[in-house]
Length: 378
Image (cartoon, rainbow, N blue to C red; front, top):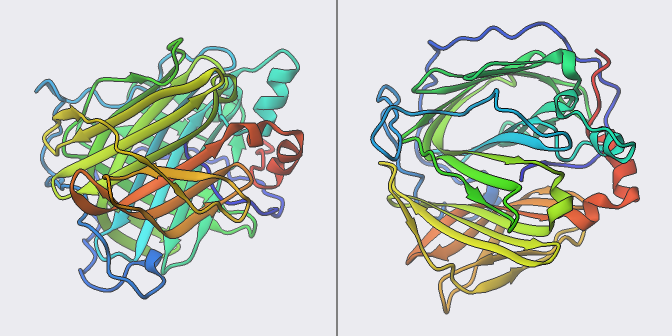
């Protein structure tokens, strides 16, 4: 799952102007190659190549050879449940990174959790676009929650307050207009995700089948064109979606997830611990054309705990280890990291996350969350 940083914000009164959906589009220029990755502290060379890239003008296809179905934004969501769409990317020159999560039934919302404790829990009343920028331009983060009146959606588009997402059959365009925390600054710009192929299969994460993960485009090209801050870059990226019919903490104690960029495609590891014991352990390899291959996840290795003492771990080829190059997000219950790892015979870079839902459920953490996730006044 994907959420980020943890410090008290200034008060926020978000702009409620509607987003203009633009399926045509601005094309960001590819950043020059060279330089050192931002996550290596200026000392290490980038490990492993970027995800396989398709030409942005090429139409995406599904794993069955049919036109890409794309994300479905208007699917029903059960009371107390959720849907989210997640994007991450690292720039070609190693200087920048981004994660984006559009959430309906925001899984880490303290307001949604409180509503469920009162016997309610309308997911449409708890939506947000989480934006995190990393790298040379500086760290910026936002996650303003909005109510039912700020949410509009159709099969191929989603609007959350002034921000929105639009799938045109080839490209997912994300229009961002948000306010950062803890210091209130504008994040405004456009991110475009060009899948090399679109997949159509989802995978259950719990024995009851109440939680599903769908790797929509494990191999993608991402173009970032920000106005505020002024920033333009391109790189390899990833798009997936999760949905559930109940809160995450009802089914899971914790998980480790990673997306590794390989020479020809990407590999994803999902290592879940459920309330009743170990859950599904998924290892999937994706090629840029849309092929999917299961593989036996290799042995588990522990990673250093975070500053908040969140446990981290991953799986690497036998007789090898993994190294945390940079911890991007360190919160009381969640960590996002960049790893140097060894998987499927390749030394590569991985985006990794560790989530502890027991920590998230504690009343102390719940009391802290409103400082990081403000709720819009309108």
